[in-house]
Image 1 (cartoon, rainbow, N blue to C red):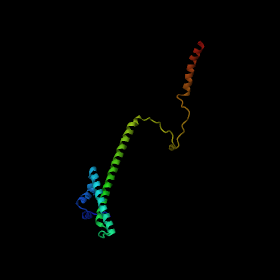
Image 2: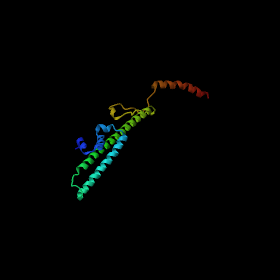
Image 3: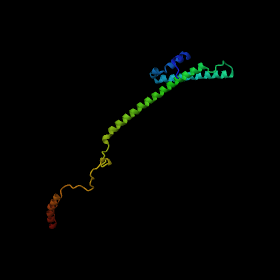
Image 4: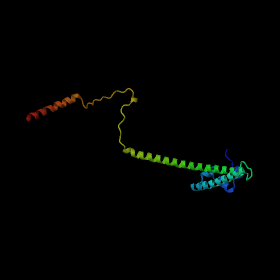
Length: 172
């Protein structure tokens, strides 16, 4: 379960409380990148310091040199709260990176579509696919060449041309 703000007020000192307060939801979205970098660095320093102190106290208690405080709750809780704040900051960084990547992807897609549409008029016109399996019962197309005119007209023209050709052939 997440720690409440009352626990934060009880365990953290004023400077740490100000740092952790910046990592909660409404405030963290409004931070700039430079401020987020500084906040990350300061939280890491404070967390590492609290963990080091807690580890020293626990080691001293094991060796019998300090008070027997098995949980060492104060520093352990402080380190845990600072680690949770650091996790929120890292999650916000990841969210911003994904948002930037998504924006870049959308911009690239729009640019590609624009280029494709601009190039569409230059692309070669391709003929239709012809007959397909989905057409159902349609008549087969003939493989023979279609006639241009009627056979009667073709005979008339050939007879008309035959006589002048014969006259030219006989002259020679």
